[in-house]
Length: 57
Image (cartoon, rainbow, N blue to C red; front, side):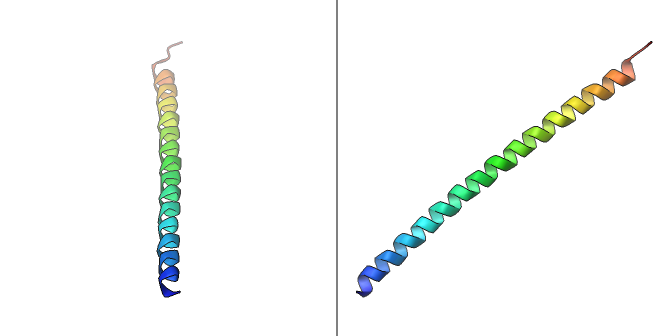
């Protein structure tokens, strides 16, 4: 009985580490998406500012 509980614990710990790694990859993906979004916003803002500064009437 002790051997089967050992295998069960090691199996569940392995599943938890996989679950954490999938959560970490999801977190990484969300962070990368947010960084990309912020870079896009700064690019648009920079283009608008340069357009306004260089605009002559």
